[in-house]
Length: 362
Image (cartoon, rainbow, N blue to C red):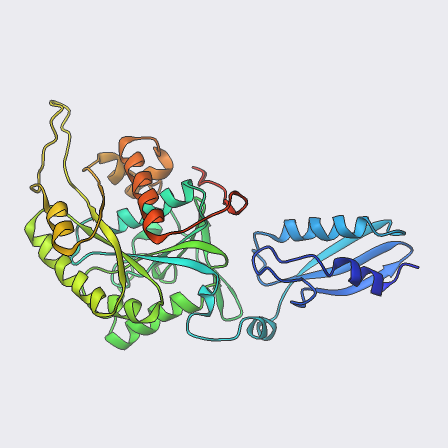
């Protein structure tokens, strides 16, 4: 005879694709009713925006469809309460990052070197390669990633947890999404640390291969907070060829090494420019800075990025170059850089883990 016990026995093997645990064990299957061969139950999600909810519903229906005497299956969706989420994910400073495999912090010693542009396009290049990627704008003084990605919406909340906004295949969070556009943000040291820890720990990042963090320039509180807070974080240093940028990058490298934070390598941005009247590159900011820094600190030079008007246009339009022109020369350079980052971080990924590639839809 078909009853509740038979239904529960049938679904006990259905797993949450991200948590890798049984839905029954997690308390996500509830309110099971059986009447005249019709099974009704509720699937309680950790977030209403759960990207795998349709997969779980389909698997529940498939499994129950094989049970004798089952004539139909109705799955209703609900969201777990704050108390349930806290029991499921016990609070600790970095609770939201439990399922993040690699953290890549993009840093520079000074502003104006294109660090945020590199962070955005490297994140997208990793996504193009099939990795699941989050992007955190931790530049508390000038968060610009919402502009670069054309984001004008605020994140939703599930209790005390923020849900990152999804755009171009990335899960994105920024302080710029939590404040009014154009509003000045004045931070003192302790508030900076508190804000970054909140962005790191109170965001439901979910299952990610890489979380790319755009750090503020310089060697102040934000960089130190990240250096101290994130275990096993790796840093990608961005510089330009001229000596004034190299001097600041040196100081940043020493800071991260002081806290035993590994540095995956260097990127030389604004390396050269093609004016269209000659095939010879014009090295506006000098040459050899990246190679010099690479030799000095024993770090790999992972890539050189030219001054490209399309990169700037993409940043202003909200459609980055890695979305609008991934096969351009600059796009190929970003993808090659992503491949080298994967090699250095030693990330292995099975084909079944691949995420959808970024689309150009807005």
